[in-house]
Length: 340
Image (tube, rainbow, N blue to C red; front, top):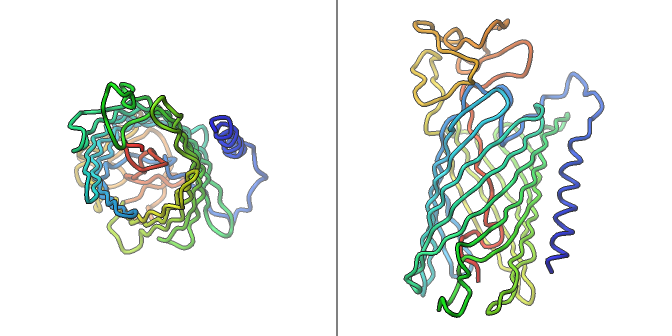
């Protein structure tokens, strides 16, 4: 099983890295592609939060997270995330806390590469014990633009390392618990029209067998849609339907809904206080200046902004006053710290 999963992940890596190959020159009528994990030309990144709900069989889950910038450069940025999650059935309940650090960089305006590390802690009502794990992950995204609109291809993978062998008989823990494992995904998304998007994702996951538990995993497939039109700036609403397939078990569907919003949106006047927003290291705030003159990033020719909250530089893509980006995807098989 592990050999099959490894070979499938290798195929996903090959597909994703294929996006690094240069493309023929585009027509000047084609729009510029913008990645979602990091945005070229962003003057700052806004902190964001999200509420999430999911339902599968007799299990309901909820989550809340905060995702905020730590430092921002011209081609890279560091973020931190805090996430709380709860899962419940008629017979069992659990809670979990996740703390993570994320680093992302732009090799060029249409590709993003990132690394992340997390610590997860949690407990279940049946065990009465605090359990935990660490994880290491990577992300890669390639954005493409055509006359039909923007499309993005994203690949990611995570390695999970529990703090102890919770499956050991000496632990005496029944039910789901943290387990050593590996997962990966390849996702495709496209902006259909302004404010509406559609995507799909194939995930592979594998948790090796232990002395007391059989191996778990094969794959999940997700179809999702997102809406930003009519919502506050920096906000999005995403809905998804996921089917999980594991050996010798029927297909397990899961419905999910997530709303993400910007906690520190860009000032609409262009002259309001910057607050916690962090401009790139080579930019300074000009005291007493207003609108586009308030942020000085060195000599550059500018033209009048089409929208006051945006900044435009002739030599390069449009730079957003404050952008929001999504956190890494994790726990792709079961959506939680706990594995059967």
